[in-house]
Image 1 (tube, rainbow, N blue to C red):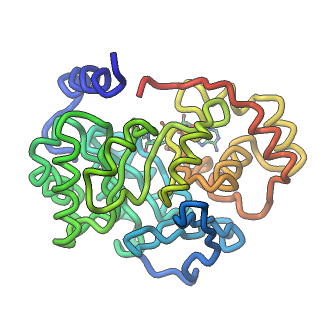
Image 2 (tube, protein in one colour):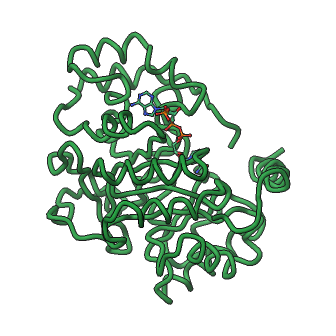
Length: 322
Ligand SMILES: NC(=O)c1ccc[n+]([C@@H]2O[C@H](COP(=O)([O-])OP(=O)(O)OC[C@H]3O[C@@H](n4cnc5c(N)ncnc54)[C@H](OP(=O)(O)O)[C@@H]3O)[C@@H](O)[C@H]2O)c1
């Protein structure tokens, strides 16, 4: 079965099982990203300037909408209610300014609450959410619902969560919502080369960002290269391998040895590896100490040789089905 058909089938089943009613910019001293380079197709690939980051504040990248986005954010998959509110608040207090949620996580309202509780002005937080496939046929209502659930006037970045029936139709509604100011930037998730080739000719606003599974054991280098050549920012979900798989990555001999050399943790080395590959990372955590640790990765740099050692760990080992 083709990936698109398979995703539609499984996700339809997931919606039936999990969705319950209303799921539930920022000024920075950092200037716009300077380093740009052109590829052979004359597309611009924006490189992260990690020298602009400091522990407790990630550097920014400029998206095709003109908006700036931190290159490190908090993921909120599986965080619910108070746990989610507290994690979002702890992340913002630790210096995170980017939060990733989705309709299907059933925590948009808690993300909104955590942002308000943090006391940091909403304009300083970059919020990403995603439309799920069961919402594609009525995307306008779904966008309004996300705004209402989070109690926000606009969403910084909205993604289509998966390829599926009516995804083009939903994306065109998101394009209209950009014109209306409800959404600032739009993008995709779980789209790979074949899906992108089919998708891109049918839409007007190029997706600013694609969010896919990426970690040292599943590196997706061809997809990253393809997206960067298209001038699209790549963001990693499961940057630490995902819940149930993190221990293996944390205990990996190569990663552990590099971590020991830099007097950092394995998680910090993995997150730094993502950023040095120009891949945005959104590690999930409900532990305030972990959250603080995850944004303290701007005081060291992996050498070319260390990057190569981690690149060599790729074993095409996907940790989820999409
Ligand atoms: N677009 C998609 O289809 C898709 C799919 C999956 C996920 N996502 C997004 O990507 C985000 C990241 O994925 P994820 O949260 O599932 O997995 P992940 O970030 O790879 O791993 C999360 C796990 O790592 C642990 N962890 C985090 N920081 C740690 C540290 N410093 N030391 C030790 N353990 C640490 C967390 O435990 P503690 O809570 O104990 O810290 C949690 O168990 C999600 O939250 C979600 O926003 C998107």
